[in-house]
Length: 538
Figure 1 (cartoon, rainbow, N blue to C red):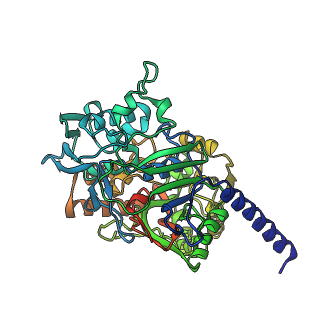
Figure 2: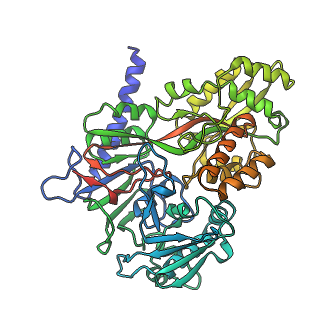
Figure 3: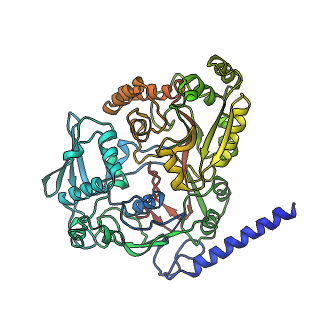
């Protein structure tokens, strides 16, 4: 063994050990023993080791992955997913949560929710006014909500929530949508206890943003007991919650920035759950005693956005040639360690729809022929941006592998790392790239929702300039259709993803989660959130 490599590993192990010692030494709560179970009559405490904790508890400004994880725990939505590991959650997998039932109008232009008898930790009963106030707050506080509900979801955001009576709300739509109810499983549409929140509102702060930055007021299974910004949130049970729940008494979401430390915490049993590990670390934990690794299907995809406002990528033959030159099987095996599947088309293969007539094929010779036909017999050169902030720490290895694949057909892809997440996302939002390694991440597990959000010509998330009237027509049709007719529209969208290649899709991602094996009850959500209230700790 190389001495330098060995000493490097020793230093990293030392750093991880110090970080682990600091983490555990700072615990002020009675927490699980090393096997992930409490000792004696101690509380059952779920310790969630996450990459980060939000700087505030308010939903908005949205704090990205940390906010998503915390609001997944809070679990105060009208409906929730009960998805299985090998099935991507659809309308049929939705179950009641704060809504006891719902009914869609025959014309699809409204959904009526009957509310459950939910009660907040403050003792306030859930009413239609809470739903109305929460949704109006979200529309006011976060512009993307109007895009998600209006442009993508086709709801009438100008008169969205109508109070029918104290326990009934009507959600108004502009037109029918196959994923209307599904949107209300999103953590972005958390329902707050407006009565409590309003007691902390002021004329200068009508939405109680200052108070909700440090406190929670909702109807879900948990209430925040202690919050240390960017460091830790401690949740205790809502004593008034009557919904389904397991036996966990307390949840601690703790920021552990180093993935190797998060892995070690779940391996040792000092954490119940570890989030966002590297694929190599998940692979290691698959054989670790006392640990279970969930390898579930997901709605997300890793891909390359190709800027079609640039002349080189305005030609679909060039985009197809690039896609054909990439060995996706090799990427999944060597970099993703078998987690996820090589992308097959323009729609994740985990959705239920007929097999497209055209799928991605690794064909370097065909790629060279297409390049020659497009007027590039000697290939061409361009620069691709990448950042570990999205899709994750594996992106550099993916970029290097794609670079090698493209070189074989004469395409010279130069790589440019963007170190800061803020700078990276600004470059993407402002369309300032030739190509960029990215990922499609959705809050709604529906194929037409993803197509509308990312690739419609009029979507503000479409930063790569793709415009195809046929694609738009298919998305609009799929969004309003159901059953076999809808499935066929999805198939055609998937096929256009291959033949027109708006985006070079690489991998249909997996929802990979690592936890102690004495915990049961995990449900697979398209949002990749973890809901401890539904789990049992043995």
